Length: 164
Image 1 (cartoon, helix red, strand yellow):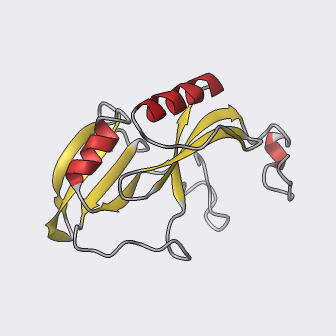
Image 2 (cartoon, helix red, strand yellow; image 1 turned 30 degrees about the vertical axis):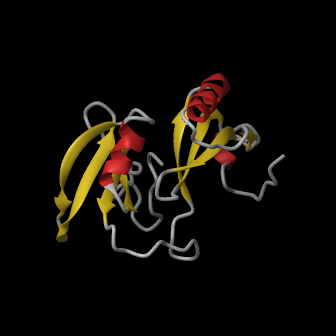
């Protein structure tokens, strides 16, 4: 996402990437047990939702809370379960460097009793999918081979390409 420039404001306004993703959860204790204790993210902030101070809001990320590594969870145990559809998010993805590391994650997750898919070839990367305790779909994807595997950098997004 680095360098995304809206056409009407060349070089003045640029989105630099995703800052964080926020999830609604039923139990922050379960979320801590999953995101910190299983996935290894650091719990970097424990606070409340600034728009609803009755809801606890925890932030998970890398060692120092770098934007782009953050997943936050707001606790709403009384809310009904969400429905996937327009207006909702289907999944979010973490990345790893190699297919071997991806296989290591699959073995590790399964050893912890967490089900996940087989490794899937997505043409531009390989990935596995799993669910967090509240049912959010999480993808773990390899960095490459990348979106230029079937297009040059100057052509990216200029034509429709069927995945192999």
